Length: 385
Image 1 (spheres, one colour):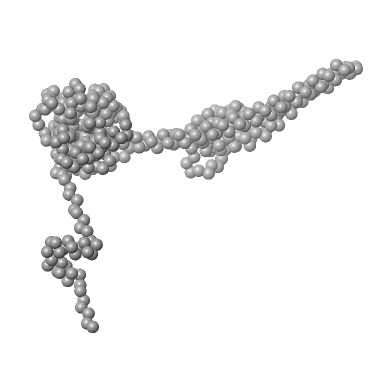
Image 2 (cartoon, helix red, strand yellow; image 1 turned 120 degrees about the vertical axis):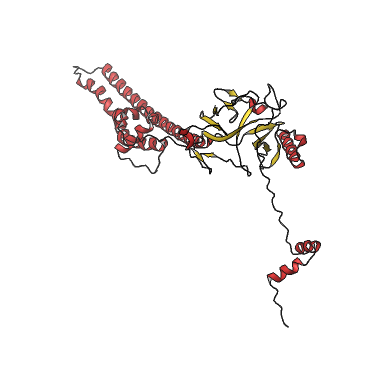
C-alpha cells in the first residue's frame, strides 16, 4: 500500500482553507488552545499645567517626565539628585485641610519632609515657580533635590545626568581594621577571666588578643561570639588550672602560725583550736569550690547571651542592609481603606500589580475590572478586621 508524505506545510495549507468554526473545532479536537495575547497598555503620562481642581487634594507632587512607555527620560547617577521632574496636583480625595490621607501622614516616605512636614513642595495653587525643590526624607534623613523640567541646572550636577537607568549601590562605611592594633595590651586579661567579663570586651580588643596569641578560629569571618569563645578557652587553659590550685596554697599560711607557736604543754583548748582551724579551712575550700562552680555556670550563661547578641546583631545588619533602599520608589495611596501603589496617576494593586483605576476618579467611575478588584480588596479587608 503506497503511503503519502504529509508535511507540516501541507497541514498549514489545509488549515488555512478551513472556516473559522472548523479551525476552532479542529484545534479543540487536537487538544490545542489558542493562547490569548496579553494586551499591554501604555502608562498614563502626567500632563503639565493643568488647571487647579479645588475639590481634590491640593498638594503639589513631583513626578519625572516620562516617554511613551512610561519610563523616565532623564536618569541620575546619584540617588539623591533627580532631573526633569514636573509639578502636578495630587488630586486624591480630600480628607481634611485640603489634603488627602496620604499627604497628611507625617512619616510618608515620599510626601513628607523632616524640616517642612507634610506637603513639602507646597500647594499646587500657591504660585511657586522655583528651579528646584528639596526634601529631607523622614526615614533615611538624606536630602533630595528635584530639578524642574525647563529650569536651569547647576554646572556641578550636570554630569550626574544619564540617558539610561543606573543601579545605584549603597556606599557602605568601611569597617575599621582593628585586627592589627595593640588594644589587647591595655586589658588585664587575667582579671578579666577571673571576673568573667570576656564577653564585655570590644571586638577590636578580642581580635587583637586573638592575633597576638595566634589563636586559631574555624571561621573566615568570625563574629563576636566566635571571638569570645576562642579567648575564653585560651584564658581557661592558661589561668583555669592555676586558679584551681590556689586554694590549697592559701590554706598553708593559716596552718603554719599554729606550728610556729611553741606552747610548753598542749592543752585541750589547743586541740579544739586546731580542730576549729581545720574545719574553717574545709569550709573555705568548700566555699571556694562553690564559687568556682558558680563562676563556671555564669561563664556559660554569658557565652549563651553573647551568642544571642551576635545573632541579633547579624539579623539587625541584614535588616539594615535592606531597610534603606532608594528613597524614591513607588508611592502609595489609601482609597476606601485599601492601600494601592501610585504609578502615572493610576492606583496599582499591590498584590497583583494590575491597574485598578485613576486616583483622581471616584472608584464608582472605574472600569468594571478595576471595580471588581477594588471590591475584592475591600471584602478581604473586612474579613481581616
